[in-house]
Each structure stands twice: as C-alpha cells, then as structure tokens.
Image (cartoon, rainbow, N blue to C red; front, side, top):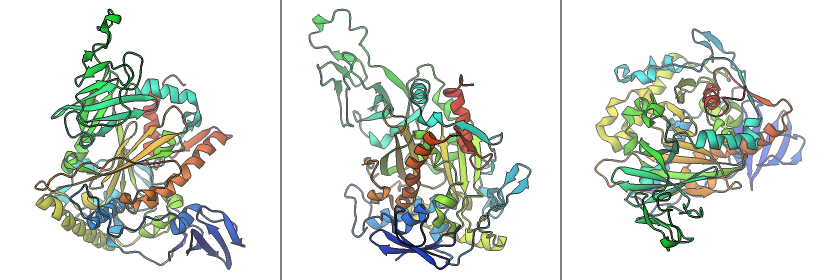
Length: 546
C-alpha cells in the first residue's frame, strides 16, 4: 500500500486498491479514483498527479521477464531502467534513501547573483567545487550561458492553428536537419526505415558499410508510397501500384511499358534525396539541398559528448506514444524542471523540486543540468555543505563501481558530476539527447496534418562491453493516445513519471484554445530553454510575423 504526503497541501494520499485513493487533510477526507473523480467524503478536490502516482496504472509484474533478442538478463534490464529513472530525478534515487519526514512548502524566494536572479538552492557551479576529482572536470561542464532577455510572451495560435502547422512544414521540416533513426535500426546494407514527419515521408536506407541515403517516399509516376513499413535487405524500391522501380542508390531501374512514356526517363531517373549526416549513432536528414552543412548545424554539441562514446551505445528501448497535443506543447513539457513541484510532487522527497537546475543555451541547442543533491529551495531544505559533499561522494563512488562492470577502468576518466548529475539537452527543433550517463533520448514530431496531434518517443541508449556481441536494436513499441506509458514495461519506473506528464498535455492543448488572453508567458531563467527554442523558431518559421 502506497502513501504519499503532498508537499504543497500537506494532505496524505493512501492507496486503497482498484484505482481508488483516500485523501486526508485537516480532519476531512475524500475518496477519489486515480483520474480525480470524487467518490465520497467531504474533501471534494485532490491533486490528480499525486492520485495517479499513488493509485494509477502500474507496471506489470517484472517476474521472469526476459527479452529473447538480447544477451541481457531481466534483472539487468530492470537495473538499467532504474538507472535511467535515477538520472531523471537527479541521481539521488540511486541511494534508495528516502526521508519520510514531511516538510511543508515554503516557496523559493530566489537570490541575486552576478548572472541575475536564481534559486536560493545550491547551484551546479557550487557543487562542482566539491568534486573529488576536479582535474577530470571538462571545460564544457564549467560553462554557463543562459538565454538573454526576460520574460517572453508567445502567441497561443502557434500551438493550435493550421496556419502555423502548414508554415512549419514548408519552412522547418522541409529545410532543417532532423533525427530520422538510429544506425542500429538499419544495421545491414539494404535495411531501411520509413521516417514520417507531418505529411512528409522519407525512406532512410543503408547503402554501404557507413553510407546512408534518404529518398522521398513517393513514386515518381503517380505518387504512391514506395514503402509503408520498415524493411530488411532491399535490393530495389519497386512501386506496388504499377511496378516502376529504382535501384538501392536511387537510380531508375525500370519503367514497365516504357515505350508509352517517351521523354520521361530523364525526369524520373533518380529518386529525390535528402542530405544525410550522422552523429552519436543517429542518422539525420535535411530535405533542403541548399541548407547549412550538418557539422555547422550541430555547432558545439558534439564537444559536450566527446567523453561518452555515444556512437558505441546500443538502442535498448524505443517507445513511441501518439499524444493529443501539438508537438511543441508536448516537447516543452520536457524542457524545464519548473513543473516538477506541481506535476511530480512525489519527487520532492528527494529534493527534486527543480528550482536549482542550471539552464544554458548554445547556438542551435540548449541544456539543463539536474543536481544529485537532497535539497529543496521550495521546502526550505538546505543541508550543510559537508553533508551534501559526503552524499555526492557516496553516490559517485557507487555509480563508478557499477559502471566499471561495463566499461572497465575507462570509468576513471570521469569526475563525480559526470556520473551522477543529469543533463537533459535539446537540439533544435525536436531532438533531446540527455547528457552524461543518462540513457534517455526523446524525439517529438507532428503526427500527420493535425496541428493538435503529435508523437513523443522515448529511447534508451545503453553502454555495452567491447568484448561482447552487440545486441540488436529494440524495435519501436507504439502506444496509442489512450494507452499509458506503463503499458511499455521495458521503460521501468520512468513510465509512471511520464504518465503524470502526459496527463497534462491534452488539458494544456485545450486550454491554449480556450485562453482569453492569447499568449503564454515564459520565465526569464527556468524556462530559458523554451525561450531559446522560440528564438530559433522565430528565425525559421515566424520571421515575417512581426
């Protein structure tokens, strides 16, 4: 039976079974289902996020679960998923230490710093000074570069109107570098994957040992999709409608009854291609032949990942969920820690209120650093520095020895912060590779031509010993809009956290349409990554919007 105390209201939430939760506060009680419907009692309202956490969908039993495609035990998969969850919460869950005492919410008063107003909580730069191995701290980790400017207004129509969706297709998705797949998705020559974004479609195919092509997924005769599903060992792309056929390199092989199409061969002699680039084990495409080089678009991002051997990791988990919300509504819910206090109140028991995350913006990408410390500015919990230092040392040493089993003595090149503090980064427009040793990668994209539908994908990238056979890439596990993340048990405990996030999204989308004041407001610092996104969005999509 689960029990949680709400950090804002002080109410106690107790699981009753069958999706029911009892809420007690100030000698009143209420019983609710996990979605927030009142069943009985004189307490008439409860936080739906904590109701969901205490009484909502659970992961199925993990007993004896084993993936037959992998040389990996069920217990190892579970530990890997828990490690991903631990990075999501700032690493403190690794210790399994939970302070059951309850501290009431007081609020973060903030403080003045040379860089501007910041949380009263300890900063990442202050924690770096406690590191056991300061000589191992890379220069990239010492960087601070917050998004300039103050609070910003963004019109709600960007999230709701067909006009903006159509502009994005023409000005963004047809012109920008975007992650299409992982190299492990197409491991052999002739393997291909269908990449769809909005109504656009591309076939991404491996054409050589380290060579990839991306072809427009439409027959040049009458437009029929060449491929509807991913495939293996293709030697050609033949249209199922009339049999027109192109080679693996995109050149025309055959037009049946070509005598009936005089002077057409020159026009259809090559499938239209997008440009292709690879980084970190991922394949990116850009449909614009005149766009900037891929390396220039990435900018400084690769330098921040140099120590982590991203390209050697294998794709352990891949779950995609269709969501009833615009793709920007969807991804912006995962670009800041400001929402943790209300959306994930159970995380505050770890000091994970998100108030003292560090936010930085660089060229086409930005990052946020989560801190593995059990403090909370919102709960007025500020342990002595010595206690924080001891706790971090203990966590880092645990993680170091755990990783040693996989990557050997290479683990000794990393400082403490690289092992236990999380980073959730995003490359414009929609690719979110987490930093350090977190396994998590997100991708967000529009779903078809409806501006109020999107896809969120969760990928886990796991390290693998060089002397062991590399496991095959996990296939995509698709979830519908009414499915829960917990229907994908391979995600581990992170699935229950994402259920709380996804609960909000359709309500946000509905509120954006209903909002009388047609703007949202983005904080000067804590929502700086979203402001950075819209700064780039202005340049790509809204440059003539005034």
